[in-house]
Image (cartoon, rainbow, N blue to C red):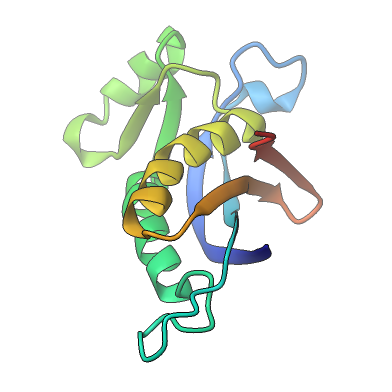
Length: 151
């Protein structure tokens, strides 16, 4: 088995943790860094584009671009039960990118969400056996969360 890790471009994304005991309860933003970890067997078919690779890094990037970056970059992620934030953001109308989710948008929950968005795309794109091992979300240079597939 081989493991590859692809760090994807960073996104500028806002959020808030509504019940937080400190400053994270305020609307703010981060430069998030999204990283995917994939495990599987190296392609051994002679003459194919991916020969010698687990998965082409550009294919990984394309999936992350479409299912993560294009959704959260320059958007504000808001919990669907955070009525104060939803009301404040509604004033901006269509001039603002708001991404409403069914969970509090912590790094931990965003790592799980990203994993769930990417896993079926990674598996369905390739015929050889691949497994999405983990998704890492770096909220700051010193703080990150990982959602790991322990199956």
